[in-house]
Length: 414
Ligand SMILES: Nc1ncnc2c1ncn2[C@@H]1O[C@H](COP(=O)(O)OP(=O)(O)O)[C@@H](O)[C@H]1O
Ligand SMILES: [Mg+2]
Image (cartoon, rainbow, N blue to C red; front, side):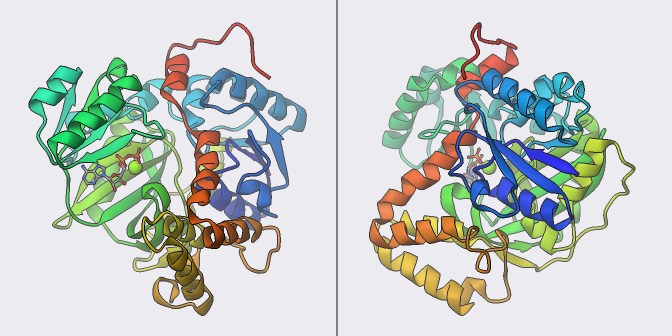
């Protein structure tokens, strides 16, 4: 099949491209830049340039529709936050005869922003940390006591989620959140910290029926709260929770949840309405990408059995970027990370790289080579390498408002 991925910069796209290519599919991506992770993968045939989603979601959509019309892909697979505009305007994609697995916009809106997420978790009685919504600056400053997590409805680069541990930090974070308009989009979510390992859950549904799912623990934190090392875990309770969530929302397509394992009980802290990093599931025997493709084209598909537990995977690229961002001894941390990876020691022992192929592929190794070189020479400069990726796919509060109100700007940016 010919598949178009909605993003070319993120780790998820890079992983999805590898899985789809390994299954014999042809993979293209749309992206604002050719200098993204997917552009350096031999698994991606072509990068089609489109405007960035965050600035111009309808410009992004128009350009993507034009690519689909010209190149006749069989499936458009949302691999990043473009899923919001795709769920809103799914009919225009499907009208081209292109397969697309997304939930209805009403369902998506129940989990897209963090205020809606909190309400959905509470309404379904799914375990979550104590959560309140602060509708104004005054109420936040008056009623919230540290420690807490403060979350803007739609994250921004500088103040999406903030962990505050004293009153001074609450004041500073509140000022930033207000400046970035967080209180205009339904209020700020205030959540009690949950303690325990973080678990990342990925699932695929067909019209409310759970077809495939997987859970892995974040063994090592990578860049921006991601995982540079993961280990698959068996959590039957999560399967039951997913069934309830999917049935209630009549979910169609992929969804991902973050949970903290509090005394072994999964406590949900975040929901993403899309496929997130399917590599650990794949290594454990659960093919989330294949299930997504089958749902997209309307092929018949059976529910998949759970994967193996204890399967370890890693992303060296994410580990190197995280090491480079350390406040102290960043250069030494980058060097140590590379040495461990080359030796297959420490976190790399008995662990599979999720961003394969890495070494045998000269083009595929370029991003890691660049990050390693910059990380060793000027560790702090790697922040802009990582930041460019996020800017390429992030749904901004501005874009979310345009999509929610179906506001097509009068002139389409090119
Ligand atoms: N209530 C919480 N308890 C403990 N850790 C949390 C909590 N909320 C968020 N975190 C931490 O902050 C990270 C980012 O928060 P999250 O809500 O997942 O937002 P996002 O992924 O949109 O940035 C999480 O991966 C987790 O490490
Ligand atoms: Mg999260």
